[in-house]
View 1: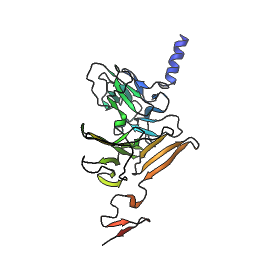
View 2: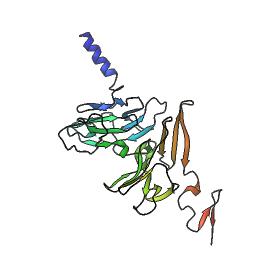
View 3: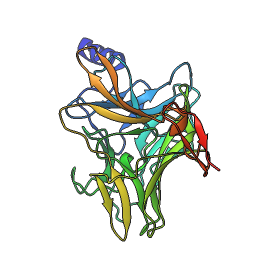
View 4: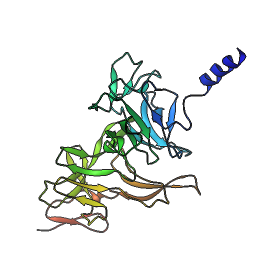
Length: 294
């Protein structure tokens, strides 16, 4: 009797976590619980950004002194309290409920299985949250993956581009603010109509704000069906690409020596970096002054 009482006590004291990297049917990740990738690279759970009290389901680096959130599920549908639940429903869909599984879902992976089997979600060591039929144990046959739906961060293996065959676009979009991960004002996307030279633009709203150097890029993939830039880094460093809420693209690397993120590259930083800043009949000088020509 005493053993059972102690068991219940410890289950309440310590949340569902540690080595569990999957979510199966009837398994629930409640607010305060989290799952961890196999090699302890990433964690998934509920969090509140900045000074906000709203709750979101996100993925962040594990074992870092600074929580760097790399993906948010319900970015535009926050939960107002700590009663949220992430689970697999009876249709094999990954869903978030604001209160309990009998309430309406506020977010889902929006997939449908073609068979009667259910599915399993797994957090990979790449930071990718994947969904696959449980009949295909931990295979590459994903029916959904978070890497296809980036928020403000690119991790190695993620894309920015277009797939014309299925009408799909991989877009990087900023947060609204440090306190709100909702869809912000800046987006990084590929501009191409399959015939013109592809260009990558940073948009502010619907206006072109900055153009990335036209390349060539070593990790650019192009075919009749799709065209995209694949973010690739060496395997010896922890690097991420972030689009900030004020429109700055940053590549950051984790330094164990100083225990913080260090900036490797950032743009646009100067006035003349902005697209079309000086107009068609002028150019920017090295000191960022527009020089006009007649």
